[in-house]
Image (tube, rainbow over all chains, first blue to last red; front, side, top):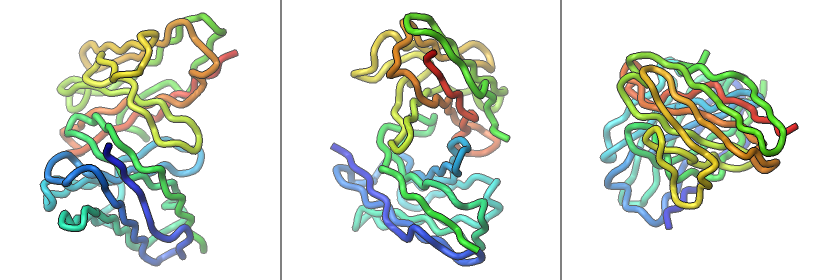
Length: 117
Length: 110
């Protein structure tokens, strides 16, 4: 059974950097798209980006190059870093496993991150 | 502004059929398969339909999906109170080089 678990701060300050980690169990991370998705309060889900084969990354242009995703497959973790935070980055952040067409079969529980001024 | 367009809300009484549309373009729905998710508050989204019309194990056959051209739809038959949730369509987008989400549709059981 594949499980994903987000970890990281729940409160960060505006203009600072958010770092979240997703710990994966039950899968070697050698294939699939390992992704970050977020949901701001009262809004819909938004794809942030993903990493596959441990090194290839793609990001949603809406984040204007502020996001970086990396993976350490030896430890079965992948991470998200978002710089220059604003209140608009306040959201529940999910890590997830999927395939290229958007079929996402496993999700983490979600981590609420609040950006304070 | 979401890449895929869904109606913000839909509703029906128990036993009725509700249909949710998802409109896209040639760079997403027109070229790739569509998946549908159910999202309840405080939980992770759940895959309901994959590859346009296939149901994962455990998803009731009251739910069905279809796709035509650059649009897709999710139908919920014999509506039940437990179907009250937000529903999202998702597919690959060639312009994004990633996943495009619909804005979500809130289904209310009256």
